[in-house]
Length: 602
Image 1: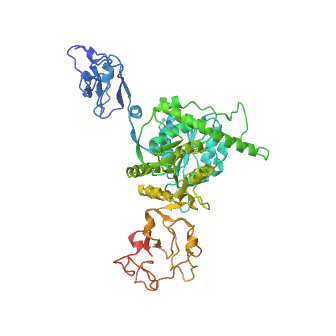
Image 2: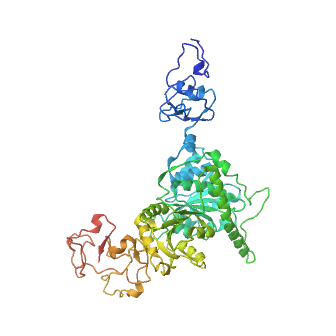
Image 3: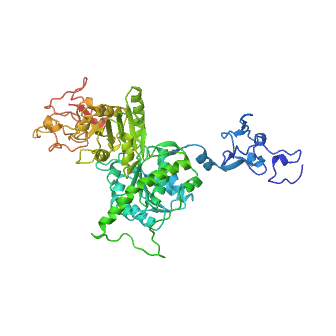
């Protein structure tokens, strides 16, 4: 045995009598876990078997003479690199573990983190961050990527959401690829700056993790935040699932930075129900993203070498023209969005369109919606199809600019349109999506009967049964002539008789016909009113304002057991019907049960 052995010598070249220690080579040492994986190029493989012979852990499996290659079992591979070292044709390459995971198969990843990873792959230059539930995980993970050196960007922890948008406008105007994220009240605080970004043509990309606007304070999901700024001039996209959230983040940069657009883009992700879920997501490599996303070349740039001024005063002689120019660019951006989707398919193989249909080709009743509830609706549609119902789904992926032509083509031939909104436009008898649909279908001859349904506000569950109910309601003869939206799964508020001796009389049945109707699974449950555990006030169960006098306190109970909690007994002079086996005096206190409110049939 020679005294000196070349550290780069192949095992097959070792002198006779020399044996490498199992689990290691002269160059590599194995451990409990690997940082590298073998990647096989089958086109170069000559089926020599060296990888099979020299692998110290026996991870290579012979796939047979028909396949003519050896496949590594990565569950047992320790990443020692012997196979790549011994391969005579260099068809085995050792790649980093995380690179392999991105390129080979989907990985379980929280959707918020997938958005952050997409921003990293796009090489954002500036991230302006202010945390607010439920979008905090996005900017939090971006801060980790910047701190770990994986993202070379300026991370600006600002003092408010308005400051975040101000920073984004300034950095984008200076020529930096810019990203931020927000939700709900944070978006409302940005309101002053949101209308400035489109007119200044600053292509900021912002993830909006949709959450209900206060009041009452609510951190759960609906679309009230984005709908409050739907006329700000931003391109607006809605994601359905985690993979789509990741892909649309990448496409948002391409759309925003296209010289024909140069407008800010908002990517809407349902809070919690989508943002906090872990889903299988295929992550592209940085090289693939860079091949799809060209470098950012702003059409307007603040540069001390060539000074210009932006954001100047708009006099009456110029203001209208500036607004019109912004609207023209926004309307024309739909073509760029379509091109970006088509180019994404060419690079990554996943197909997207501005309007997506599901089993709607021959559907007589079509459910129109946006966001993640579409996946639940797909299950309901499959069930209804099995029962012989001709039902389909049309989902809007592009909200602004509204894809009018594509939408009309998707719903052509339908008899009934059930437009589903997750926001209530106060003072108007329809939701925002329904208003849009009715406006551009109004002049069409033979238009379908359009009915509007509001559901899922404040994070309330949306179930398959809700879509069954909506479909049945949409098929009724009066569906197209109803005066206003229907609340699905929500009790209609009605004033209790025992509120006060001086309470005003109840509205007549004629007056109540214009109120939101109680629909869905709750429709047949009767009208219920919650009894507060900490006060003797009645609260409405629907999200509309009660009639005058409804908030007067009820008279105190005439009898109360010693030491009883307030509200533990009903006023004795008010006759009530209790469930079988219950008595008014022995009913357990709602506060002691730990319930916020308790509903009882009147």
